[in-house]
Amino acid sequence: MSGLAKAFVDGGEFMYVILFASAFGIAIIIERSIFLLFRYNINAEAFMSQVMQLVGSNNIDQAIKLCNAAPTAALPRVIKAGLTKYGDGASAVSAAIEEAKLEIAPEVTRRTPALQGVANIATLVGLLGTIMGMIQAFDALGTATPENRSAVLSHGIAVAMNTTAFGLIVAVPCLTAHLLLTSFTKKIIDDVELYSTKLDNLLSRRLTRAR
Image (tube, rainbow, N blue to C red; front, side):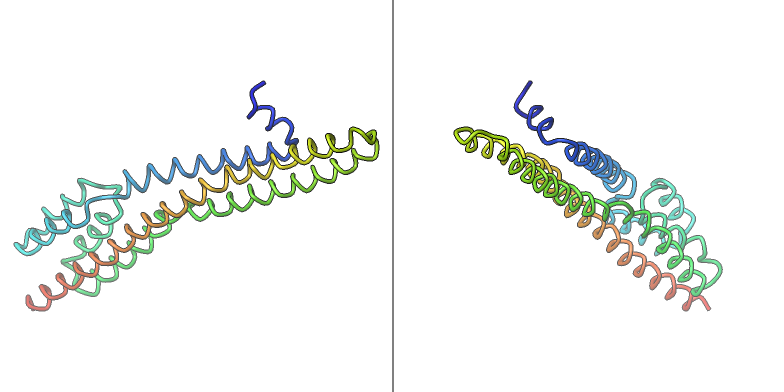
């Protein structure tokens, strides 16, 4: 049996809780990475440059088709919502953009905060396993012979520390992933806020001049 496998077995039942937490954390990291990097993400500056040019030339339909080319990305969905209401007036455009932003935000931010919970659970379960292991190690001293007590205690403490080590092994990557995914989520949300406001102002000015 390898050293890692032996350490896992020696750690007892708490190791299985930590293992489940790690599997849950990995699933969240993979799922969120796929969605944030490939489904919701878009080159916002380049996309909006094209949209603004099309709107400036009064080619609203073509701008909507450009949004349809990236149907899952967060920013095009919000921009499309405003463009489709262009013929209904400035207030309708603003309302559609705000409604789309409210729909998008939970989709972009969901599940990422759970990584903090996974990290905390793994750490606390690891500490609990260590405490229980220490209790068992000191209990074992009562039945050990005087010449073996030092060896029994050192072995018990070493085994008890396995759960804390495994808990931290799970917690550190989860917290790192949480930091990175939160940063990326914030960028997507900030882009949506910035460029949807710019579009809203542009469309409002055009509609005001058209009166």
